[in-house]
Image: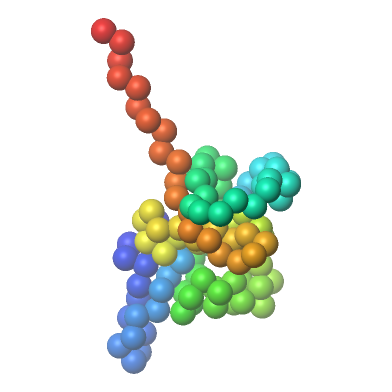
Amino acid sequence: MVGTGLRENGGGDRMPRYQIHRLKENHRQQFRWQPHTAGVSVVKPKDYELGGVVEAASEYAAWTQLRDGGTPLEVGDVLEIEPGVLRIYKYIGFEEARWLIPEVQAAAL
């Protein structure tokens, strides 16, 4: 995970650091065929693999940097600026997302 998601650069400005979560290939085709829905997307951590960290001014700057570097984001990939703050890459751009946290069922008495 990425601590605060920010790093000081030489000028005292803070540069966001994005943790990349790559959608596993076996889930990518299914994601592509799902209809677009408005609102927050709920994603399952088990469907993703860590893909490194990128420093960029915004998620769109990160997208450009990764594309130009030969490791582009693909539809369904997620950028995490700080723990729990997610942006999912869709055909229309980036949208808010959150991890699906399974509820722990109380033990039967």
